[in-house]
Length: 156
Image (tube, rainbow, N blue to C red; front, side, top):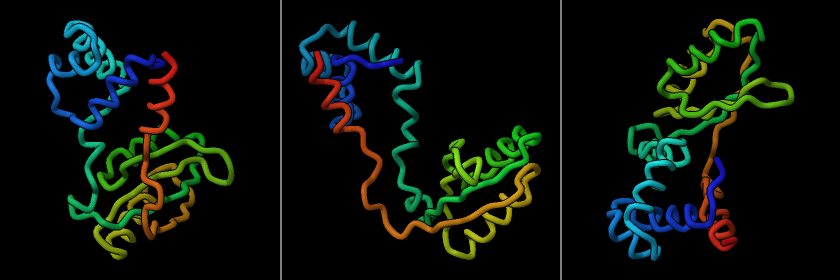
């Protein structure tokens, strides 16, 4: 689904105050509470607004080390590879990609020793042929949507 300028403005307000009530949100946007409620519900139901846990810093869960693991898979075993990656709690994100690898996983760990355990577990998954791990030293530009929201909010 594509969001419109009202949805974008709604999300901007939610970004600054995630606990805001529908009444206060309606007042801030100059629209009815019913409209706010239905749009907010649709944004959640359609997956536009993800789970609150996506906001968590993995360091607060004892996993301050982040790495990116390029994964080459056996195409015939893709389902097994994906199922195996889903079974590892330290694998927090996976994308299908083009290039020398088939997938790129973001993983978190408590230390380099723990990262070695995690990457070893990834390599033992049926269908995974090869991996290449890159440790993130620091987050230079965090994931951000505010600039895009501003563009969309200004369209209306």
